[in-house]
Each structure stands twice: as C-alpha cells, then as structure tokens.
Amino acid sequence: MAGGSGGGQLSVPPGFRFHPTEEELLYYYLRKKVSYEAIDLDVIREVDLNKLEPWDLKEKCRIGTGPQNEWYFFSHKDKKYPTGTRTNRATAAGFWKATGRDKAIHFTSNDHSQRIGMRKTLVFYTGRAPHGHKTDWIMHEYRLDDDQHHHN
Amino acid sequence: MAGGSGGGQLSVPPGFRFHPTEEELLYYYLRKKVSYEAIDLDVIREVDLNKLEPWDLKEKCRIGTGPQNEWYFFSHKDKKYPTGTRTNRATAAGFWKATGRDKAIHFTSNDHSQRIGMRKTLVFYTGRAPHGHKTDWIMHEYRLDDDQHHHN
Image (cartoon, rainbow over all chains, first blue to last red):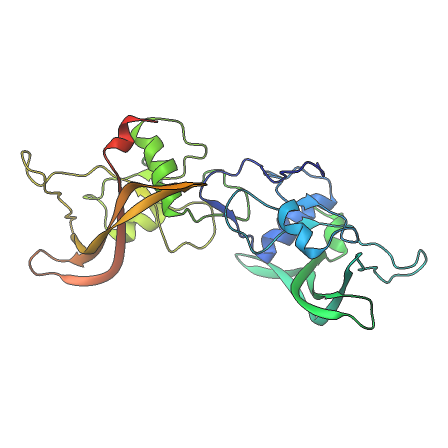
C-alpha cells in the first residue's frame, strides 16, 4: 500500500471531499484500523512520521484530485528509548512538539455522549530541540482510550 | 429511484461530503445524466420541481448523514405553455424567479479553458406572481451548452 509515485488515486467519486468529523476519525477510521476491521474506502495511508517531513505528506496523503490543505494518515508511535514511554517525534529536518492541552473527543448518539479518545496538537520545528524554528505546520494526533480497543 | 421515505441512504463512506465544484456538476454529473452514461456514485436524485417546495428538498435530496445546507437534484424543465419556450417554475406554495445575470461555467484542463454551460440563479417567492414574498431560498440552475450534448 505504501510506495508508488502517484499515490492516493483511490476511487473517490467526483465531487466528494474527505472532511471527516473528529468522531468519524476516531470512532470509524482509527477504531477499525487498530482492530484490523475492513474500512469501506480505505483512503487513509500508513506513514512513518520519523521518515517524512510535513511537506512530504501533501503528495503521499493526497485523496482524489481536489485542492487539499489537510492530510490524514495513520502512524505508529516510535519510542524515544526502547524502555521508556516518551515518543520520538524527530524527522531529518526537525521535530514535532506538543502544544496546548489535549482535548477529549466524544462519541454522541441519540441519548448519550461518551468519551472515546483524545486529541493532541503538535507544531513542527525545523532544527534540533531545544533550539529549532517554529513553522506553520500543525498536526492533530488522535488516540483512542484504552477500553475502545477491547470492545467493538 | 424516486420515492421511499428515508432516501439518500446511498453508500457514501464515513467522512466524505458531497461538495462538487461547478465544473464537476456540469462536466461530470449533468453531462453523464443527459447522455445516459453511468455515474460512479449516483447521489443526485431526480425531482419534479413543480411538485416540491424548497423545504421538501432537504429530506428528499439528503446525501449521507452529515449536516447539509445545499441540496442537489436533476429536474426536467416544465414548459409554461405547450408551444412556448418559457419555463413554468411555480409550485403549490410559490414560484422560483430568476435574479441577476447568468454566469458562464468553464471546463479547465492543463492548457485550455472552454465554456461548457451556464448557471442561472433563482429566488423562491411564496404566493403568486406578480405578488409574492421573497424567501431566503436560492437555487442555482445549471445547463449545458448545446454542443456539449453531442460529443463525448
């Protein structure tokens, strides 16, 4: 699935744009992904965020042919140290750094609302921490709450 | 295809919204429709505009489950008089009235741009012409240029 130069020439009918809500991203796409369930139209690619600069994602994660200013992907977290819990968010050109507070994402149905996961916001800096220059690249990293993995 | 109460439960994958460009509407959807070609995901319904009020279109032309504030449909023009060319745009509750100038729609490829059709803007009035009360309902009526019907 990864690789190939054009990429993203998935069969999205003309006129359709991928503008998922956060609930759809978490409750449909990410939940199915982590439980290896089939996704109707599998438009979200897997990438290795440590090997790609933000500007590389534009081509790699293109969906259809329309103009795009947001890109969606799945990525495994890379541990900074084999025994630790910190995430390695460095690339060749810079690093992603968390900013602000994480936000809770809820799943809402007719009569109730339930927290299903969290969203972390990160900013891309070129260079190496603790130095580095802030860029305009923003990433939202969504994760499911642990108990979302177990029941479907 | 017409009829059925729920309507619009077509298989649009989660996260996808129908936001076609005018070029896609004319050059893909309408062109295929008038030449009886297959449409990948046939989400635009046929309606009789003389039999439906604007507010009836919301349910009838729903696409997927997301919030919508624009509705798309195909409709045959009804002649006001059998021998004339004027269009009957009356409904039980009111009528559609053209406003402003028609706008040309172009098809653009790498190296050229070509006029393929026109867009007329209409406003819905309740009551009967020449009286009637203007509403906030706006319709864009797209038509292909004649020569677009003949070649494909």
